Length: 157
Image 1 (tube, one colour):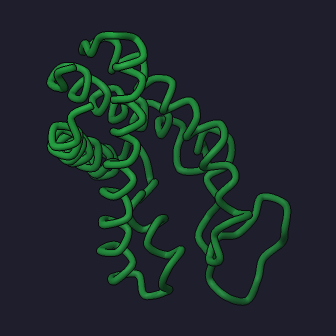
Image 2: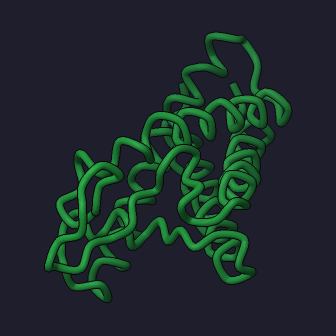
């Protein structure tokens, strides 16, 4: 395994992923703000949360790139199409398992099963993050396919 390549391509792939998620939000494909969701787990200050969430997202992108690389080595190849397929699987895991479980972990997020509270809370993503718009799964899928495609296309075994 090439740690340097994993870090470089993981950084670039995460940069593309983050950019595409922000573009999806700017184009009103989704209301989901990934950096805000991550950052508000640490601080209630929304401006600071976006910066902290950005850092958390890039750190996540790096260690997840390591998982992709381990799969590339297990398959004995790193190709754009294998990376894209892994991006699809990655998206399914995030939309079906990770995002719906956030209300149980996030101190500043409302729950699908509890009523209103006096303090302002973030809206829970719900299944497939559909609470953030019906095109949210598409925006997340496109961004993660791009992430996997970059890693698969440029990482060399």
